[in-house]
Length: 306
Length: 106
Image (cartoon, rainbow over all chains, first blue to last red):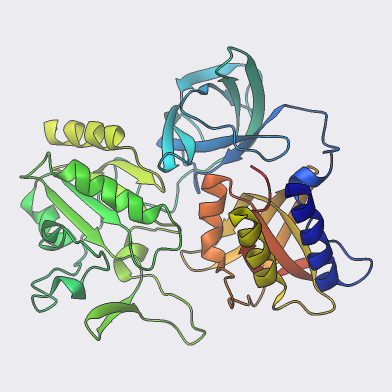
C-alpha cells in the first residue's frame, strides 16, 4: 500500500511540474546516495546565539532526515572556539530533551555561556538506547549581541494591554480560549515598577505561526499555579484589533501580520518567547520556542531568590 | 489508509497553484533567514539525498492548505518535512508555495 502510495504521489507531482523538471520524491522511495559522512545530522534551532549566557537549542536527524531526538537518546556537547583553537574543548554541557509536540516530536536544549563572539564549533555526542554512540560536529557564528534583550540586561519598560486597559473584557487582550485572567492584569511597565520578579510570555494561541506556541503558553500556565503570588504576563506578539467579540490580526497593506510594539521593544524575530525578569528589572532567563516546565521552575526560583 | 488520504490531500494542495514553470522539492528545514518576526527572507531545505537547497521567499500562494513562511520555524524545530513549489529566477530558487509533506517517512 505504501509503495503504491509513493508511486502515486510521484506521478501526481510530476504532472504538476511538467516534463524534465525536479519533482517531490518521497524520502523512502529511493536509496539515499548520502551514504557517507556522519550518521547523524544536526539542526540548529536557536534563532540567535549571542556571546554570554544563552540557550543552545538543537535537534538531530539521521541521513534520511528521520528524527533521532528522543527522551532515551542522550546528548553530550563539546564546544570549540574555532577562531582560536579549533580542536580544544572550551566547555562542555549535557543537553536535556524537551517535547516540542508532547509525546510525538522533541528537541534538545543546553544552557551555555560563550566567552567570545566569532566562529564556534560544537561536537554532539549522542548515545542511543542500545548503547551505541554517534557523533557529529557543526560550526556556526556566535554574535557579539543578539536581537532579543540579553540575559542580564534591563527589560524594556513598555505599556502592554491588560483587561482593565481594554475595557474589562479578557477577550480583548488574549486569543487564548481558556485564558488565565491573572496573565492579563499587569502591564510590563507596572510590573517593572513594582520591583518584583515576573514572567513575560510572548505567545498567541489563536494566531501563532507555530504549533509550539500554544503548548508553550499552556506550560507556563501550568507552572503558574504553583506561584500564586508571582506576576505572569501574556502578550500577543502581533498587532491585534478587537472585533466581533474576539481579537483579530491587524494586517498591513500587503495582508501580513505586524509585530506589536512590545515585540519590537524586546527585539523578537521569532515567537514564542518566555522571559523571566528579576526584581531588579533585568532579564534572568529567556526561552525561545520550546519550554520545559522544569527549566521554567528553575529559572523562576532563581529569580525570586534574587 | 488515513496516511494515504493525508498524503493525497497534501500533494493536491501543493499543486493547486503550480504553473508550467514550477518545480518542487521536499525535505526538512535546516535554516531560516529571518529579518523580523514577519519578514522571512529565505530558508534552506535538506533533501533526502543530502542536497542543500536554498529558497528565497516569493509571493506565496496560501490557498488550499499551504502555509505562510513564518510556519517554517516550527518545521525546523520539529523536523517535520516540507514540500516547496518554486520557480527559478536568474539562477535563484524562489518559493511560491509551501505545504506539509507528511508522506515523507520520518
